[in-house]
Length: 89
Image (cartoon, rainbow, N blue to C red; front, side, top):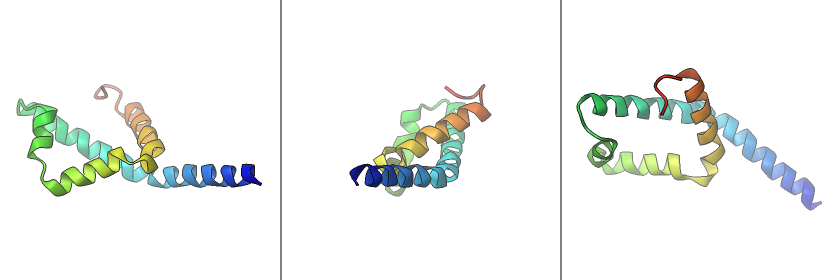
């Protein structure tokens, strides 16, 4: 009984992560582009976050820091590193 519930919950989490993957990937690509723009201006990543308005900061912290999106974030990072091997850190 409990194993069935556990497997169902894990399966739903994996399904949600797969559904969220394209959104997380697009967010990661946009974030990397912003970082590149700031780097070209000679600014640091910290400066980029300091110049974000409160709404952007809240969105970023919710997208990147939510445990619900943890697996989707990892998968998006892996996909990004595979598609952009020279620009990944």
